[in-house]
Length: 316
Image 1 (tube, helix red, strand yellow):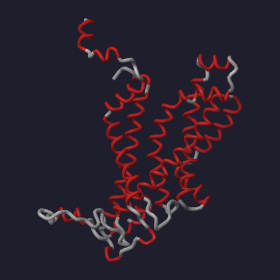
Image 2 (tube, one colour):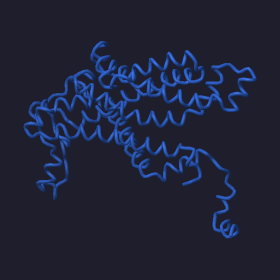
Image 3 (cartoon, helix red, strand yellow):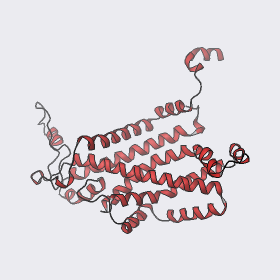
Image 4 (cartoon, one colour):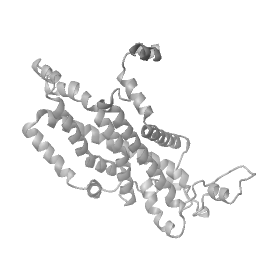
């Protein structure tokens, strides 16, 4: 039976040594959520990079009152059958807002703002939270108790409410909003990294490093941190979606990016009065963009969680 099985398998597969990175890539590719999430994230990141490079947008001077609340000409023209024979030429594919500004251009630039804000917030949260959590988990004792009680105090406040309070103190603006969002997410990574440090600190290779006289900082950097990366990467991917939502929420409340510069949450806030009068496109496209960004990172995070789970190694 084993001979039949071995003959049915390609010789290259039998002779190829096991590669963890190749195994992770294969499991990622076999995951439908990872493929869909990866495609959405790639598309969003590509648009966010390409649009600012090729579209020199000057927000303070962008105004055309003659195109005020212009409907999406491509969509309306297609529904009316205007493009059956003539080529499609659209001045406002996503329509225009109350100031006659192209929603498509502003969504593209607002997408870049949201991604940069989310990436900045998550980076700060991961770095500070990981350092705090690994230190507390490895040293344990009084240090662990004091640090984690501080993290529990921060977690006692709803993250969005705490971010609003911090921005109110620091002052409205995109930079202060990013700082506030990053502070609210630090305990998440601190608790996760601490749990990993508590699990790893009693392993044989850590005890061997301690017996050889390795310093605490060296053990954390060389042994505990590398073995804690997988769950931190997954949480950071999921946290990007959360950071984008919180940044948009601050912008919706007028505490994030200030006008006239585009930001998805602020665009949703400005579209409330237009939605009442039937100008649905002003709210639709910024809202759909936020949904796609968050959905992409959540699906990719779920796929990474399954791919990086060591219990699934060799089962797929």
